[in-house]
Image 1 (cartoon, rainbow, N blue to C red):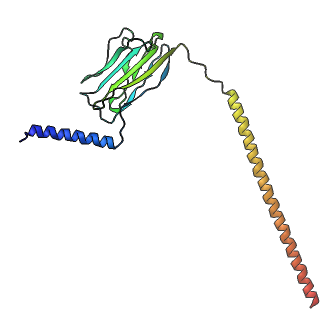
Image 2: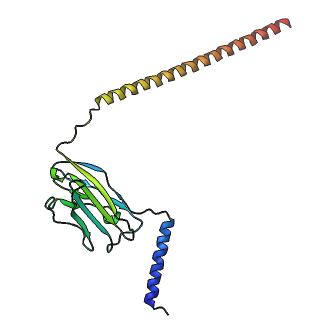
Image 3: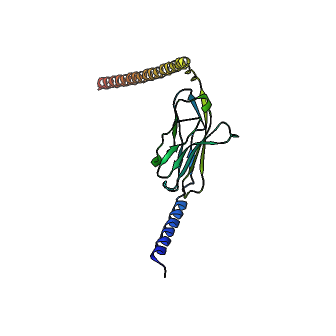
Length: 217
Protein backbone atom coordinates (compact mmCIF):
# COMPACT_ATOMS: atom_id res chain seq x y z
CA UNK A 1 0.00 0.00 0.00
CA UNK A 2 1.42 3.38 -1.04
CA UNK A 3 1.96 6.14 1.49
CA UNK A 4 0.38 9.66 1.16
CA UNK A 5 3.84 11.06 0.36
CA UNK A 6 4.32 8.57 -2.48
CA UNK A 7 0.82 9.31 -3.76
CA UNK A 8 1.50 13.06 -3.76
CA UNK A 9 4.84 12.49 -5.48
CA UNK A 10 3.23 10.27 -8.07
CA UNK A 11 0.52 12.87 -8.62
CA UNK A 12 3.09 15.62 -9.09
CA UNK A 13 5.03 13.52 -11.60
CA UNK A 14 1.83 12.72 -13.45
CA UNK A 15 0.93 16.45 -13.51
CA UNK A 16 4.37 17.36 -14.87
CA UNK A 17 4.10 14.64 -17.52
CA UNK A 18 0.68 15.92 -18.58
CA UNK A 19 2.02 19.49 -18.72
CA UNK A 20 4.94 18.45 -20.91
CA UNK A 21 2.56 16.50 -23.15
CA UNK A 22 0.25 19.50 -23.53
CA UNK A 23 3.17 21.80 -24.31
CA UNK A 24 4.50 19.40 -26.93
CA UNK A 25 1.08 19.07 -28.51
CA UNK A 26 0.61 22.84 -28.55
CA UNK A 27 3.76 23.22 -30.64
CA UNK A 28 5.67 25.23 -28.01
CA UNK A 29 9.23 25.72 -29.23
CA UNK A 30 12.34 25.43 -27.09
CA UNK A 31 14.04 28.42 -25.52
CA UNK A 32 15.17 31.23 -27.78
CA UNK A 33 17.42 34.15 -26.83
CA UNK A 34 16.78 37.39 -28.71
CA UNK A 35 19.61 39.92 -29.04
CA UNK A 36 20.86 42.40 -31.67
CA UNK A 37 23.84 41.17 -33.65
CA UNK A 38 25.69 44.48 -33.33
CA UNK A 39 25.51 47.71 -31.33
CA UNK A 40 27.42 50.95 -31.93
CA UNK A 41 28.08 52.98 -28.78
CA UNK A 42 29.53 56.48 -28.54
CA UNK A 43 32.61 56.76 -26.36
CA UNK A 44 31.80 58.24 -22.93
CA UNK A 45 28.04 57.64 -23.12
CA UNK A 46 25.71 55.04 -21.57
CA UNK A 47 24.55 52.20 -23.78
CA UNK A 48 21.85 49.59 -23.25
CA UNK A 49 22.71 46.03 -24.30
CA UNK A 50 19.40 44.19 -24.70
CA UNK A 51 18.77 40.49 -24.14
CA UNK A 52 15.38 38.80 -23.88
CA UNK A 53 14.31 35.18 -24.07
CA UNK A 54 11.25 33.08 -24.79
CA UNK A 55 10.44 29.85 -22.99
CA UNK A 56 7.57 27.41 -22.64
CA UNK A 57 7.94 27.55 -18.89
CA UNK A 58 7.56 30.22 -16.25
CA UNK A 59 10.78 31.26 -14.56
CA UNK A 60 11.51 29.40 -11.32
CA UNK A 61 13.85 31.32 -8.99
CA UNK A 62 15.25 28.05 -7.62
CA UNK A 63 16.36 26.63 -10.96
CA UNK A 64 16.80 29.66 -13.23
CA UNK A 65 20.37 30.38 -14.39
CA UNK A 66 21.75 33.40 -16.20
CA UNK A 67 25.21 34.87 -16.90
CA UNK A 68 26.66 37.82 -18.81
CA UNK A 69 30.23 37.42 -20.05
CA UNK A 70 32.68 39.50 -22.08
CA UNK A 71 35.49 38.55 -24.46
CA UNK A 72 37.60 40.72 -26.73
CA UNK A 73 37.44 38.23 -29.61
CA UNK A 74 35.91 34.82 -30.22
CA UNK A 75 39.22 33.16 -29.36
CA UNK A 76 39.64 34.90 -25.99
CA UNK A 77 38.59 33.59 -22.59
CA UNK A 78 35.19 34.80 -21.42
CA UNK A 79 35.04 37.04 -18.35
CA UNK A 80 31.84 36.79 -16.31
CA UNK A 81 30.70 40.17 -15.01
CA UNK A 82 27.05 39.62 -14.02
CA UNK A 83 25.15 36.54 -12.82
CA UNK A 84 21.89 35.47 -11.21
CA UNK A 85 21.83 34.22 -7.62
CA UNK A 86 18.87 32.56 -5.97
CA UNK A 87 16.95 34.96 -3.72
CA UNK A 88 19.42 37.75 -4.61
CA UNK A 89 18.53 38.26 -8.23
CA UNK A 90 21.00 39.83 -10.66
CA UNK A 91 24.35 40.56 -9.06
CA UNK A 92 27.24 42.40 -10.79
CA UNK A 93 30.58 40.68 -10.20
CA UNK A 94 33.87 42.41 -9.46
CA UNK A 95 35.53 43.32 -12.71
CA UNK A 96 38.64 45.37 -13.30
CA UNK A 97 37.38 46.17 -16.77
CA UNK A 98 33.90 47.42 -15.89
CA UNK A 99 34.12 48.29 -12.20
CA UNK A 100 30.66 49.50 -11.17
CA UNK A 101 29.66 50.66 -14.64
CA UNK A 102 27.40 47.65 -15.36
CA UNK A 103 23.80 47.70 -14.13
CA UNK A 104 20.93 45.29 -14.63
CA UNK A 105 18.22 47.12 -16.63
CA UNK A 106 15.80 44.31 -17.46
CA UNK A 107 12.71 42.75 -15.90
CA UNK A 108 12.76 39.06 -15.00
CA UNK A 109 8.97 38.89 -14.98
CA UNK A 110 9.02 39.88 -18.66
CA UNK A 111 12.03 37.64 -19.51
CA UNK A 112 14.14 40.75 -20.05
CA UNK A 113 17.80 40.37 -19.08
CA UNK A 114 19.11 43.62 -20.54
CA UNK A 115 21.98 45.58 -19.00
CA UNK A 116 23.37 49.10 -19.25
CA UNK A 117 27.03 50.02 -19.51
CA UNK A 118 27.84 53.57 -18.44
CA UNK A 119 30.81 55.75 -19.42
CA UNK A 120 31.62 53.53 -22.37
CA UNK A 121 35.35 53.19 -23.04
CA UNK A 122 37.23 52.15 -26.17
CA UNK A 123 38.41 49.04 -24.29
CA UNK A 124 34.77 47.99 -23.82
CA UNK A 125 34.55 47.03 -27.48
CA UNK A 126 34.17 43.31 -27.95
CA UNK A 127 31.73 40.42 -27.68
CA UNK A 128 29.02 40.28 -24.99
CA UNK A 129 27.42 36.90 -24.28
CA UNK A 130 24.00 36.45 -22.67
CA UNK A 131 23.50 32.89 -21.34
CA UNK A 132 20.11 31.71 -20.10
CA UNK A 133 18.83 28.40 -18.73
CA UNK A 134 15.23 28.06 -17.59
CA UNK A 135 14.48 24.46 -16.51
CA UNK A 136 12.70 22.28 -17.41
CA UNK A 137 14.04 23.65 -20.73
CA UNK A 138 17.12 21.50 -21.25
CA UNK A 139 18.81 23.72 -23.81
CA UNK A 140 20.86 26.68 -22.59
CA UNK A 141 20.08 29.80 -24.61
CA UNK A 142 23.00 31.89 -25.84
CA UNK A 143 22.88 35.38 -27.34
CA UNK A 144 25.96 37.04 -28.87
CA UNK A 145 26.27 40.83 -29.28
CA UNK A 146 29.16 42.63 -30.94
CA UNK A 147 29.69 46.04 -29.30
CA UNK A 148 31.55 48.64 -31.35
CA UNK A 149 32.75 51.82 -29.64
CA UNK A 150 33.01 54.91 -31.85
CA UNK A 151 34.51 58.31 -31.05
CA UNK A 152 31.91 60.22 -33.03
CA UNK A 153 28.55 59.49 -34.55
CA UNK A 154 28.29 59.43 -38.34
CA UNK A 155 26.95 62.71 -39.78
CA UNK A 156 23.25 62.75 -40.61
CA UNK A 157 22.44 62.05 -44.22
CA UNK A 158 21.84 65.12 -46.35
CA UNK A 159 18.22 64.75 -47.36
CA UNK A 160 18.01 68.07 -49.29
CA UNK A 161 18.31 66.40 -52.67
CA UNK A 162 15.87 63.68 -51.67
CA UNK A 163 13.38 66.27 -50.45
CA UNK A 164 13.79 68.29 -53.66
CA UNK A 165 13.27 65.21 -55.81
CA UNK A 166 10.27 64.20 -53.72
CA UNK A 167 8.78 67.67 -54.02
CA UNK A 168 9.34 67.70 -57.78
CA UNK A 169 7.79 64.28 -58.25
CA UNK A 170 4.92 65.18 -55.95
CA UNK A 171 4.32 68.44 -57.85
CA UNK A 172 4.40 66.66 -61.19
CA UNK A 173 1.95 64.06 -59.98
CA UNK A 174 -0.33 66.77 -58.63
CA UNK A 175 -0.27 68.62 -61.98
CA UNK A 176 -0.93 65.38 -63.84
CA UNK A 177 -3.88 64.53 -61.65
CA UNK A 178 -5.22 68.08 -61.94
CA UNK A 179 -4.89 68.02 -65.73
CA UNK A 180 -6.66 64.67 -65.90
CA UNK A 181 -9.50 66.04 -63.78
CA UNK A 182 -9.78 69.16 -65.98
CA UNK A 183 -9.80 67.08 -69.19
CA UNK A 184 -12.42 64.77 -67.72
CA UNK A 185 -14.58 67.74 -66.72
CA UNK A 186 -14.23 69.34 -70.18
CA UNK A 187 -15.20 66.10 -71.85
CA UNK A 188 -18.20 65.78 -69.58
CA UNK A 189 -19.31 69.35 -70.31
CA UNK A 190 -18.77 68.84 -74.05
CA UNK A 191 -20.82 65.65 -73.96
CA UNK A 192 -23.59 67.41 -72.08
CA UNK A 193 -23.52 70.26 -74.66
CA UNK A 194 -23.80 67.77 -77.53
CA UNK A 195 -26.69 66.04 -75.85
CA UNK A 196 -28.39 69.38 -75.31
CA UNK A 197 -27.88 70.40 -78.95
CA UNK A 198 -29.20 67.06 -80.18
CA UNK A 199 -32.17 67.40 -77.91
CA UNK A 200 -32.87 70.92 -79.12
CA UNK A 201 -32.59 69.81 -82.75
CA UNK A 202 -34.93 66.92 -82.09
CA UNK A 203 -37.42 69.24 -80.41
CA UNK A 204 -37.13 71.66 -83.39
CA UNK A 205 -37.90 68.88 -85.84
CA UNK A 206 -40.90 67.83 -83.84
CA UNK A 207 -42.19 71.41 -83.76
CA UNK A 208 -41.72 71.74 -87.54
CA UNK A 209 -43.55 68.49 -88.18
CA UNK A 210 -46.39 69.61 -85.94
CA UNK A 211 -46.73 72.90 -87.85
CA UNK A 212 -46.71 71.06 -91.16
CA UNK A 213 -49.45 68.74 -89.97
CA UNK A 214 -51.56 71.70 -88.88
CA UNK A 215 -51.15 73.30 -92.31
CA UNK A 216 -52.43 70.24 -94.17
CA UNK A 217 -55.61 70.03 -92.17
